Length: 121
Image 1 (cartoon, helix red, strand yellow):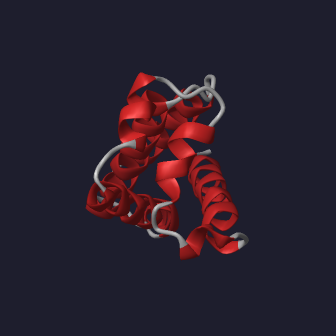
Image 2 (cartoon, rainbow, N blue to C red):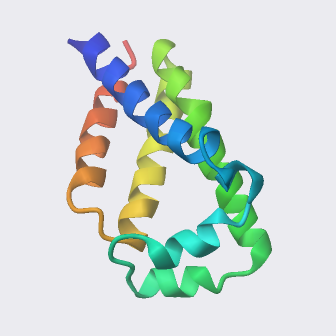
């Protein structure tokens, strides 16, 4: 059962990464988030402020998102601290997405999947 949770967490996040960084021109534009905060499903007030954030912050956030969506899912295959760091990185990303827009309950559901990765044994 634990392996199924790990594979689900990895598969979902790598699917997002493939869509975002692999198949489109987004990978060439490290200011992708500037537009995303406005054209996402239901942007909120925080999205509007982040749309107008300094460019260095948007680029740093894009780098964090790239690292979390491409590298950290593979931490689920390890035990101990790497899995713990990977799980918390994925959870922080989902909380950030949850705070900046309305994606329904998807973010909370993915956080529940990531809680299964916190088993350090």
